[in-house]
Image 1 (cartoon, one colour):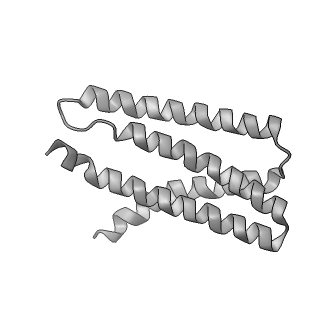
Image 2 (image 1 turned 120 degrees about the vertical axis):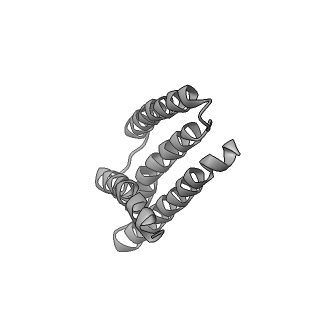
Image 3 (image 1 turned 90 degrees about the vertical axis):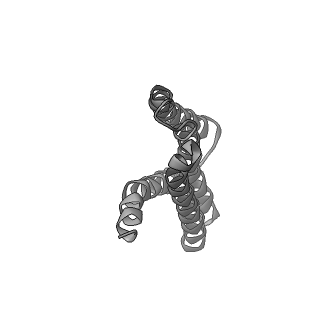
Length: 129
């Protein structure tokens, strides 16, 4: 019963992650075709950073469910958000230090996926009416 309560949220998170990953792949292919392979690679890395961090957050956010575990639900949600920020900072730092990538597609794709993360749940909620 308790797991059934979290199922809609988990399904929404899975759909959102799949949409984000699809947008990253499509954007990387489009950047590679329109400009060059380096832009495609940078686009894939920038979007991948967001998708990886968001997947970790989703795992933490839906680790617990139920009224009896309300404190654990809240704690795992906040821990997941903090971990998401740390992972994002670490991955961007690693990319900046160890890789030679174009910064424009890297940041544009990251911002594109961030926009999807903001707008897509509203579309999911409105489609259920």
